[in-house]
Length: 85
Image 1: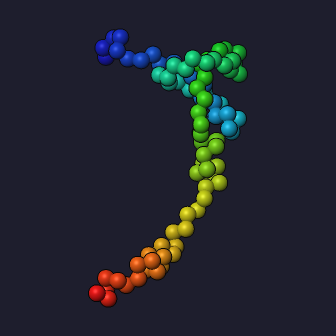
Image 2 (image 1 turned 90 degrees about the vertical axis):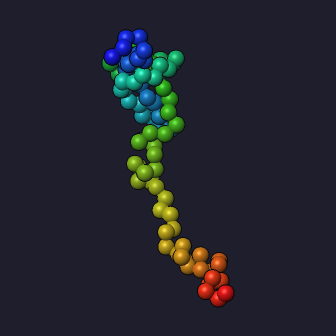
Image 3 (image 1 turned 30 degrees about the horizontal axis):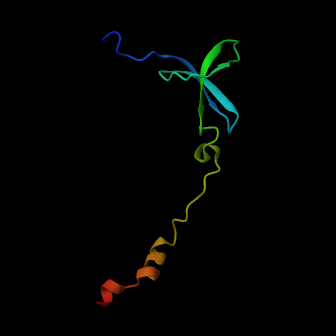
């Protein structure tokens, strides 16, 4: 590895304000805001819009799209035009 070309890798807190959860991990991201963590130390914090705690797929609140009826809707909309001509 070449020295001086790699970003600094260190602890960062990712916070999902919508779900009220935060987790501490390591990242090359360097946010300017800081937060005091549960261990009493201060870490940089990055606010995220959505995480596994608030994403509909992971929480089970996902909408089920109507997959049935698409062929019927297509036939109703366009009919049998190709076969009639």
